[in-house]
Length: 151
Image (cartoon, rainbow, N blue to C red):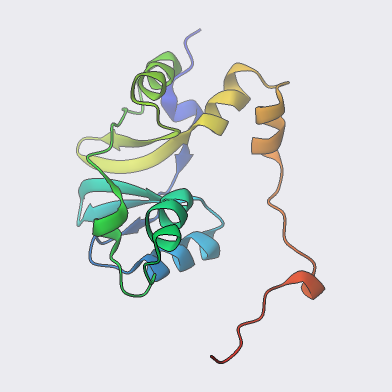
C-alpha cells in the first residue's frame, strides 16, 4: 500500500504575512511550538521561514528582529507537494532541493506541512531521527529561563 503525504503531514499550518517582523514570526513559532511558518499573502504562499532562517539570516548578521520583515528573510517560492502525492515524492523533492520542510497544497490552499521528521517517523520508525521527532519538545526548568532585563 502506498503511503500518502496526507497520512504523515502536520495539518493546520501557521502563516504570517511577508510584512510581519521576524519577532512576530518568532513569537508565533514559540506560541505554537513549531520551527517554521508559511509566508503568505492571503491564500497565496510566497515563502517559508524557519527558526534557523531567523538566526542565520538575520540575528547572526546583526539585524534587529523587530526591524526586519519576514519577506526579507524567508526562502521565497517554496517547493510544495499535494496531499495525495506518495510520500516518496516528498522524499525526492527534499533530496533534490535540499529542504527539510514542504508546504502541502490542495487546490491552491496550504493545508499542512510535511517535514523530514514526519517522513522519518513513517519510513524508519526505529531511527534516531524518528525518536527525536516523536519526542515532546524540551522546556527548560524555570531557573534556566532567560529573563529580559531593561536595557
